[in-house]
Every structure is written in C-alpha cells, then in structure tokens.
Length: 459
Ligand code: SF4
Ligand code: SF4
Image (cartoon, rainbow, N blue to C red):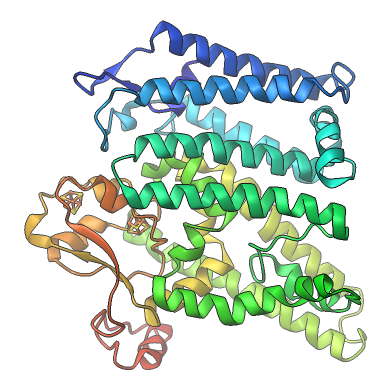
C-alpha cells in the first residue's frame, strides 16, 4: 500500500502544497488497485482459477485502472500546478531504499519470466485470450500480455503525467503523443494487422532499435501484396528519410520523447524515478562509450550477416545464427528489457536510452552535429535552484549550462522538456532555431564530428 502511495508521489495538500497523508477515499482507491494486482498475481500462480473466462480480465484490470487513475486524480485535484519536490530523496521507493530495490527486483523478475520462462505467465495469458481473439483473431501469448500491460501502464501513468504537468502545454501534448503512439501504433494496429495480414507489424520500430528489420532474412520474404511491400520497406524509409529530416528540424525528441515506446514508458511509469540519473562527468564518459559500442555492435553484426548472405551463407555458417542470437540476448533482452526497465528504481528512467539504445546513438549524433534543436538558456534569470539538473533523466547537468548562459547542444538530450517545465524562472527554452549559431565549429559540422571522433571536441 505505502509503495503505491509513493509511486504516485506523495499527496500534496491543496492549501500548502506540503506532503499530507492519503485521505480515506485515496486509501480506498489504492486498496481497489491492490486487489486488482493481487487477483492478477493469483491468476499467475494458479492458471486454472480464472482460465479464459470473458469476465475475469475486465474485472481485474478494471480494478487496477480505476483504483490507480482515481488515486492520481484525487492526489492532484485542488493542488497548485507546478513542480513539487516533496522529499523525493527521503523516500525509500524513490531514492534506492529497500522499497526501491524491491520494486527493481520485481521488474527484473517479470522481464526474466517474460523472456526465458514464458510458461510461468500462462495464467495472465489465459486471462487475455478472449480479448486477443476479438482483436487479433489469434491466441494470446506472452508478448500480447506484455503489450497489454505495457500499454495499460503508459496510459494510467500518462494520466498522472497530464495531471502533474498540467501547467505546461509542451508536456500535455508530448504525453498525449506517447499515449497515442503506444495505444494506436504499438498495440491496437499490430493487433488488427495480425488479423487482416497475419503480420503483427510495428511501424514505430525499425533498425537498429529493431535489429531484425535490417537483417537479410527480413528482405527475403515474398511480399505478394502492397501491404507486404510496405512492411518490407517501411523501416528503410523511416531510417534513411524520416529520421535525418525530422531530426534536423526537431532534434531527437521527435522520436525519443514523442513516438518511441521505450521513451513512452520512461516518460510515464518511469517519471517518479527520473531524479535518480547520475549527473557526474564519469557517468557521461561511460554513457558515451557504452551507447556507441552498442551502435558499433549492431552495425558489425548487420554487416557480417549481409556479407555472409551475399556469399550464400558459406562464410559464417552456423556462426551467423549465433551472432544474431548473441545480439538479441545481450542487447535486446538483457540490456533493453531486464536492465532498461528493471533498473528504473535504481538508475532512473532512461537507463536503456542513455547507455544502450543504438537508435538513440544515431539520433544523438545527428542532433549534436546536424540539427536545429537546442535548449537556449537565459542565464541572468537563473537562481541556481538545481531543479533542472535534478529532474533531467538523461543525467545532464542543465544548471551548469544555465549558469553560463550557454545553449545546451547535447547528443543525449531527448527533448523531454521537463527541465524547462520545472524551472521556476523560465530560464530554459526548447528551440528549433537557425542551423548555425549552435556550437563552436557549426559552420562545418562534418569536421566537428571528425574532431569529436578523434577525441578533440571544440565545445
Ligand atoms: S536537458 Fe531537459 S529536455 Fe534534455 S533530456 Fe534533460 S530534462 Fe529532458
Ligand atoms: S535554470 Fe531554472 S531550474 Fe535550473 S537552476 Fe536555474 S533557475 Fe533553477
């Protein structure tokens, strides 16, 4: 119970905006949500308890949704809009205390079960069987269960974001966007496509985030229909055309903070832990090495697979399969899933985006050297409160830039805009200004990129 209370951030009093204990109604709502989760746990432990009855899933997930959403509405109703820190660094769940660790263990255990022990989720899968048949015309599996829970959490915690940041239009639109893309493009549309085209296609994921879509096997299918051709070439168009163009105009935020499902979960369920990201120089160094190493790994594996394919598979032999399996095991499952989400309560909400995502690495290089996006700072107004640095999920010491009055032009910035939303002085502004004028050497960005690769950045 107390874990849930804190996950929603403590309840602020309407008059003073200081922390107050939950009201009787809020306790009741939390109990309702708790009963829902308890029934879900029972279904997992004893699959025959509910089986595939039509009524079980609506009741169980209805209790979770009504209880949690009702609690968030009650907590934020009548409070003053704007950021409230409310002792986030004093709370066990939000500051790596016992509750935080327990939650991290819970998340990682779920991912381990999902990837390697799918049978253990059979009770949950059965619950969704009627819904899966209705939506997809196919039986539910662990991935449908995962997609369903993922979408539910993005929507419910998205509501929390909408309430928490209701004073900031950018946050309202951006949160609406991640909720829309998760529900529409990452859950409903793939389900419908499964029914009509037998292909659960995800338009929002493409190489390198979805490595398979850039590997030779993907292109060896015979499309037969126009929709098949769309599935085949969508990823190439999205990567080669949409990605550079949109990143040039808007920075990596168009994808990382508006469209991507990983970013969507980080910006909703992960929000209560965003302050845990490490802001040190050392973490920044580790981040650059790690994320670019993963990018190199996916490029090398993809190039090897294509080279192997061109010589008829004789070159790598069975090692081709091993290379694919290793990449998927280490990066996609262990890093993106188990660590990426499991470590929210320990390392903040963007562990994967910051240290591992190869798509973020590409977008970051484009954003740093070939984009109009920057966060401008009005240094004279800064009062050094540090809210911006505290709540930057990507570990950027925003305050240091603000104090120098320097534009923030960082590869890692996902443009979530929370630094700007929590600044009490209006110092920070996300802008897509002129291409020039962003950093020393921006007249010849290719040379600046070359300098950076040689370890000699100019700014
Ligand atoms: S610098 Fe601001 S916009 Fe960029 S990731 Fe950090 S909080 Fe988000
Ligand atoms: S930029 Fe705003 S939030 Fe950041 S330290 Fe200065 S006043 Fe505080």
